[in-house]
Each structure stands twice: as structure tokens, then as C-alpha cells.
Length: 122
Image 1 (cartoon, rainbow, N blue to C red):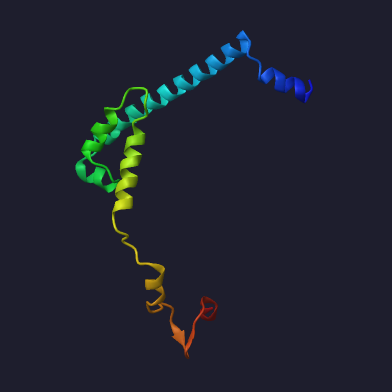
Image 2: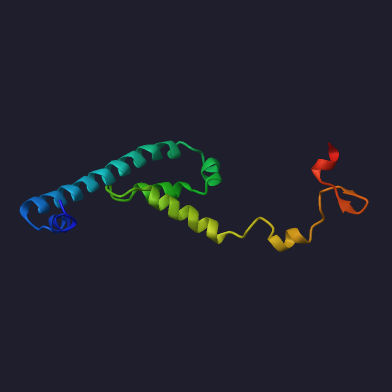
């Protein structure tokens, strides 16, 4: 089959092509619903965590309630991921900047004014 024939067949708008497209869309919807169902089942595990454990991963009890209140065909983990990302972006950085590292003293021992490399110890 030539490339032209394949292009024409893929752009066909007959009843068979329409049925294939409808089946493809229906298949995608089934997969989305299955993922949503699976995520809701896994959220039961999160609901069993205490508040401190949820806080460790950046969630609150109300985040879980909001996620579960989404329609059944939507994946509730999208709400949880969005909330965690928002909180992480809003909090100040707890790590020093590279400029602060440059001004800190070295932890490498010195020998006669020059840094000692690990090879000198062997």
C-alpha cells in the first residue's frame, strides 16, 4: 500500500471510520473511569493516615474531602497534586542559596595551605 493510499484511508469519513473514532473515544473514557476508580480506592489508604502523616506529604483532611467530592469520572489525585504543588511554591526555601554555600568554610582538611584530596590518604 502506498503512502498516498494510507493517508487517504486514515482521512476517510465513512461509517467504518466514524465507528472506529467513536470506539476509540469510548475506550479512552473507559480507561479514564478505571483510573479514577483505582485512585479513589487508593485514597482510602490516605484517609487512614493521621493528620501528622498527611501533613508530612503536604496534605490536609480537607484536601482529601475536596478530592473525593470531584465527579466520579474525574481522577481525584489531580486535586491532591495541585494542592501539594501550591503549598510547596508558597513556602519559603529552607535550603541555603548557592551564594551562601560559596561563603561558608570548607570541610576538607588542609595540608600546608592546600586542600587534601582523598588520594593523599592512601
